[in-house]
Length: 166
Image (cartoon, rainbow, N blue to C red):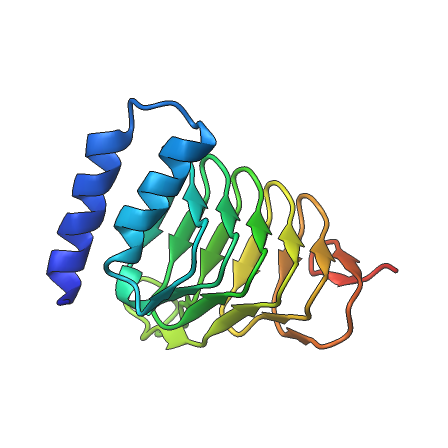
């Protein structure tokens, strides 16, 4: 599906269902509708009414994935949420980053890198996941953290920038 049609479809789904409560049945229905534009979307994909998903054609979702209220996912390039991933309130996942040109970030070319969140991982509330992040299976990103880079060991990560805590 074309990029502009995908954006329009995302807006349509969000607008149509925003007044319905965040009940698991309704959230699964939202996930099902969003899944039609995704290259891969597993069963039991739950999306909150206030979540914003951009560029569905670049989002790959496994089974039993949960997206909490006010999450923003901007998939400029591939973002993969493997099975049983949870994304907490107010978190942001962006697979692109600005570059500095002539003292300004406004017109710099975007650097795009994929994001992969491993199976069973939890991104807690108010986190930022930056382009190029790979989080190991079964890991936790603590609340209010910002993560960038590859973290191959299962563990608890936190801070700004995130580092392994445990």
